[in-house]
Image (cartoon, rainbow, N blue to C red; front, top):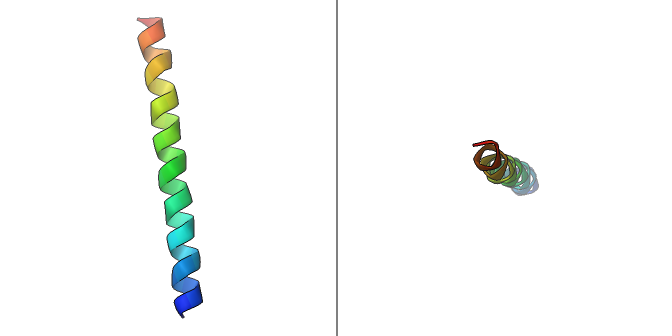
Length: 34
């Protein structure tokens, strides 16, 4: 069970990082458009 929790936490961690990277990448693009 502990291993499953670690895997799940890693998945959520990568998802959060991916979402944050997308937001950080999209913000400069929008500012450039303005």
